[in-house]
Image (cartoon, rainbow, N blue to C red; front, side):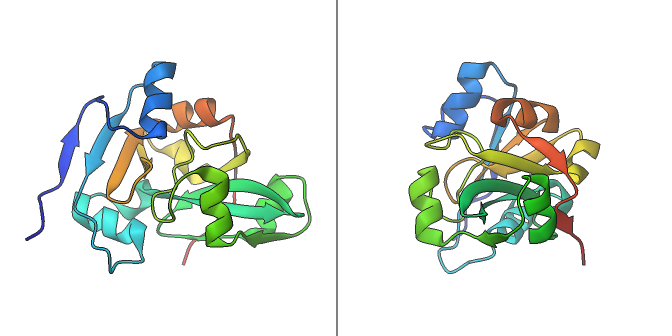
Length: 169
């Protein structure tokens, strides 16, 4: 039996992402749902479970740009434009990092990689479509948890820049 989605205001969730936001005094909300372990489309699962527009939920991808790990944050309703991401980072070549490497670098599991509270700070690019939103959602650091916050706050806490890095179908 699936649990109903839960939403709460700021509260301790035990993830490095929530702890970093709390320390920084950033306003955020936590939204949880029961993750289906058979599901591999984590963003679509979150949108459906939380009844949110897919354009407001963003996935965090670890991308090697000229062999240097970086972070790309794009809507789950899009695909990452690797060339555009590389250019935004000042590089030439980009490829998605291996899942195990992404987990080791960030300290999070795939499907729960948050752009906030990673083990080390990486160059971060947020798709510019986020800047049009009042609230966006990113992984809270575990599968089945999304954090809602303003794009401005996400940019500030991650030292991200925004750029056109998503391709929409």
